[in-house]
Length: 284
Image (cartoon, rainbow, N blue to C red; front, side):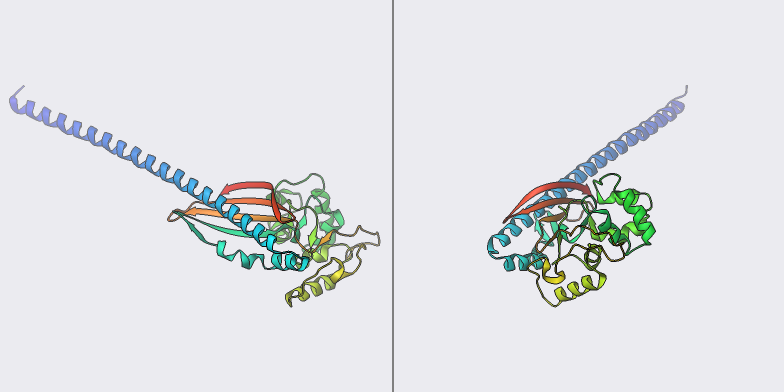
């Protein structure tokens, strides 16, 4: 082989070696970048989770402090009525590189799918569908308890539109009582003995600033059938003037990162203390 040919072969060999080294370097860089992204994602998720948990704890401590200062029933009713405004400073809080926001839901402003009787649930569903369809849906609901509100859309006869319509008025985490100082009109109108007109009147009175101190304040003595039902009597609903179950929703995230972590914590209100009953987490 001539010297020029040997040089050509060597040049080709060197070029192939450079290509191979370039591929190896590119793979190493790609793996390093992927590992960096994984670490960044893990860090973002960790920051988001602990930010959300911090929001839950901050809200719980704040609520207990408010209850400690509410000595009388009118004070407690007022405290819960203004709870959203009093917790507004927790809507967006910086915590190092993380942030959290908190919302509180009065679960006694909703009907509990597992605890409410069939007549009450039918009273709610009738406001969004036909009487016959409402009866069929409630019969399916009573076959087995639901663990999550999201399971509602899987019940036979409930499509997405109906599930979305009734979801704001339902829960699976309440104790069955209905807070007349917070329940919206569809919830009140679903209760035995309360007509749509009575429910509307109670809501309007609340909107003027009136606070109900006893369950009989807006409705008198209850215990009859719900509007649109037959003549058969229904048990009197469990009414309250303050909540006994609160849902605290905490969302946390890291600045500059898209991942958000959500925690839903259900607390029983026992005197001036909150007692944890349920805890669920998810990434958004």
